Length: 358
Image 1 (cartoon, rainbow, N blue to C red):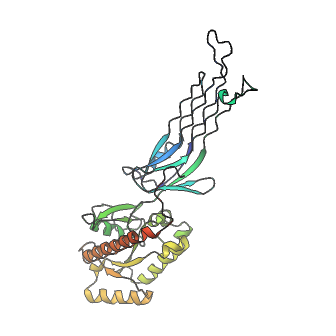
Image 2 (spheres, rainbow, N blue to C red):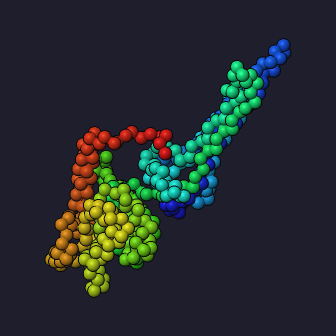
Image 3 (cartoon, rainbow, N blue to C red):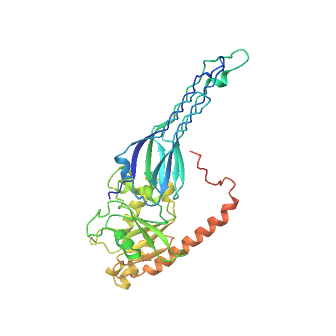
């Protein structure tokens, strides 16, 4: 199935049903009075998270979604039926933006979570509401109000704990394949990865984490070059970035430190907050160097970058350093989750999810 992470749709909530003008007509009751009922409310449009979906490709074919209109009121004080709500399944991780105002409508982050994106119209009133001592035969009623109509931009942002960052052919796909059961496309040429890949690393609830491999970022990505800019948003929800750099490039003129600086510059142009996200340096293809040459290359890179964070040397082919990297990531994520759990009660603005909040 083709991976699609953006789609524009139009949602139309149902209009409210009109109120009814009616008078009671029964034998021997010549002046029965008004008995027009109210209309029904229009149906609303909701997005609902579905963990079984992983792409927005279906919305490329069906772009218009409309909820049911409320039924008009009837005589004998009968209220019209409410229009049925429309539930639209979307992948977990979908961000919803109003395409006309660019306002963030909300995000669907859990299976079964519902997000109201278009509210149904309110019902009209029948003439029974307008009777009074001076107006015994009212012929007034009110129409139902129109339902909301919106153009929405849906953005799928994959939910991952760890994101892989690096130039094309830095070894990101090989790393995710070595750490998890994911099988991304791997080849000896740039831009092998054309869409994000997700893999689950480890076993057991305490050691598992989700890792995301996105297409390589190149110089000029923030201005639209390559595929990196299109998919950098998928790193926005990660807790940790692993910055892969080829420590043994085939072209000896290539400077690994300069490659790292290029990626950091593109991150800062795209989103300064993402550039400040915690980032570890991972030296890939370590099996191509002997121990002494690897240590010298690592030292040169650290000194050139004035790097203060963790540094790991790994090989996806020989599995050198992979267990140490996995253990460090698990420990880091475990500590982060514990910190967030401890801070949660102190956050006064933290509220339970309200499905009626758009």
